[in-house]
Length: 405
Ligand SMILES: NC(=O)c1ccc[n+]([C@@H]2O[C@H](COP(=O)([O-])OP(=O)(O)OC[C@H]3O[C@@H](n4cnc5c(N)ncnc54)[C@H](O)[C@@H]3O)[C@@H](O)[C@H]2O)c1
Image (cartoon, rainbow, N blue to C red; front, side):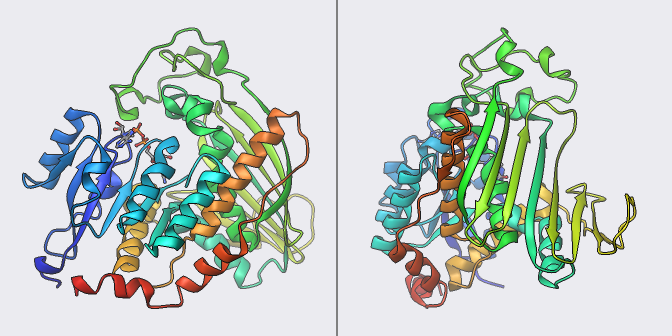
């Protein structure tokens, strides 16, 4: 057991709906503890003191934490603030765990990566879907060659809780998210890239605000968090009440993607379905896989014999059930981040991949708002690409945290 003297000292920036993620890193005496928090809302800081202890350092402005001794911070704030906050902490030599999406523009995402490189400070982006049991099982099936060489990936995303999750606060505003194709889609664009082993080169998208724009009942909920208004009885979608005063993002979007390894993919997102889950199919030269369910009781079916419709797969693989939020992926990703801070081990997530998820989401939004024009995704500067490829192979990060050993 690691003694309390060696605990990593961590901060949490943003104490809203998602901040419970950081609680998974609060293990005083067992390697890591939350020692500081920042949020402009006083009640949230006071509540954090109850969770993390009376000696917690509390700030309403993140700059007040730049000069205290911290080994890392969790940035769990609205997306539009990610880049500025990350750059300030990285420049101060404080390692950063940043929630997805990395940023809301490609320029901002690139600036975060540049700052991590120039300061030599560890950067980690919280793409927790790479740790979900169903995505890992799909990846295993692909890497074993069970469906041959992958040629196409299609993801249908039924965002059944969309009205509650994305249309009652800042998520509904372009200026704060760019689009939901980026905000929510960043998860799946990243998984498509990860399963395909490539990044999007060119794309074309369509979408509109089909349903939620019609609802006139609006309210400012900035003093609440999503858990305060979430209810499955808010149904059907047009019966929703108290939507954000401004809604200028789309609730329905589809994008076709051409990857740099010639794999063709498609991602479809709808925020007013009755059910909330994702359905992927991956088609290869020797078969096809598809997930049914993406959490408890999920199955991956694999077909590799020719036939007409068959409900049963040639193989049916049960997705393992793990306890904890997001199918256990939150616990796993926090464990990986803490290991990364301690030893600089290879990570399943990657700042470069996170940047391509942003660049693809931004390009898709541009295409969608221009009526489906084909848009090319800008490449990351080669020196940044090489830096992040190399960094996991060196002891650079390990050296930064010698003081904790
Ligand atoms: N990976 C996942 O599965 C997952 C799930 C949910 C949310 N998220 C991400 O987590 C982030 C936060 O989402 P949320 O739902 O908790 O939002 P939220 O609105 O509930 O909470 C955000 C908090 O940040 C605070 N804040 C705003 N600006 C700040 C600043 N400059 N400095 C410090 N605090 C500031 C707000 O007061 C609020 O308490 C988003 O980027 C979202 O995409 C990820």
